[in-house]
Amino acid sequence: MNEPILIRGNLLSAVTQAITLGIALSVTSVAFAAPVVPAIEHGTGQQAHEANAPVIPSHLDLTPIPIPHPAMMASTMSERFLQNPKAIPAQGNNGQVTFVFGQSVPTITCAPLRICDISLEPGEVINGAPQMGDTVRWQVAPAVSGEGDDKITHVIVKPTDVGLDTNMVIPTNRRTYYLRLVSDKKDYVTSIGFTYPDTQAKQWAAYQAQQAKKAAVVIDKPAVSVDQLDFNYTVKSVKGKGMVPVRIFNDGQKVFIQMPKDMQEAPALFIVGQDGKDQLVNYRLRDGYFIVDRLFDEAALIAGVGDDQSRVTITHHNHRVVERARSDKNWFLDYED
Image (tube, rainbow, N blue to C red; front, side, top):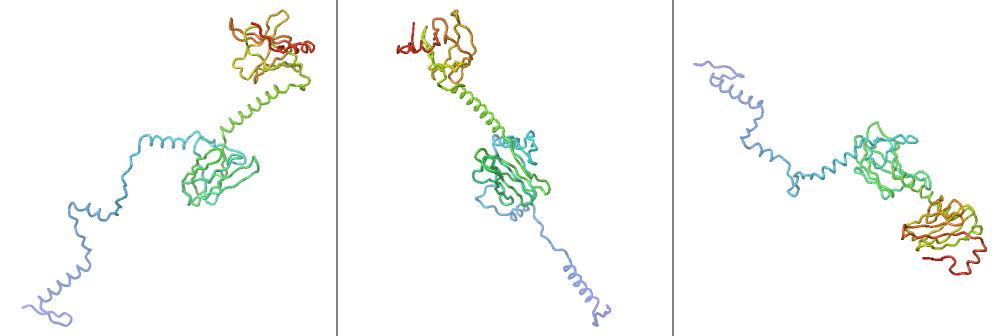
């Protein structure tokens, strides 16, 4: 027989002791064992993953949209223009950094708690307000300096954080500015300006027009007063019917021959010498006037060649001859075939 043992003061047989010890071990192993994860059967893993994925509304289509080749080319061209390596900024007055307008999309670096000043052309004004891609983390304000034609519009830009990257469009009464704005912790540009090749071309065109206007004034207003001008000239068509001058006069040094406004082809001008032969003379045709750099007694306007040639003579007279000629109503125009 098995001998009884003492457990907490009780006598138990060896069999009872074994049963009690087995139950205690089972309870302990259950209490400290790792949690049991049910095994995923083969072929059901994808279904479990889809069950945990967020539900996409049926009206949203997240299928990638194919980009046509022309659109990709346009994007490449835009990026090439943005990154134009030839668009090098230059140092302007008062520390200003200047870009050539229309050469690229300038990238302007700004920093928090610092101001970036973008100056426009004198006299240029903004239409509406600048447009930005990020209006939350960038601050934009206008400013003006100067007066009259020298008034300059400024666009003041400030970022509120570092690592920002956006773009801005400034529409004005003269052009449209396209800019890229980035923010950095330390680096920034204080003042930005532009040079304008189209403005320089317009300035040269205006200069040339002003010079031409001055030359025209010289033609309309000789060096002497009107009462000192000599209009004692008669005109005669001796061959064909050429273009007849409207007015002829001299100021004592030069002869001015005004031609009709509808003149399409200017005739050649010659001086008739005392021997009756045509001679070359210095003259220029400007704004409908022949300007001869010397006085003459007789000249000829010749157009065409051969049988189609026309010849109009211009003769200078003294006052007495002219007064007598004016008694004839046809004194100025006398055609002979």
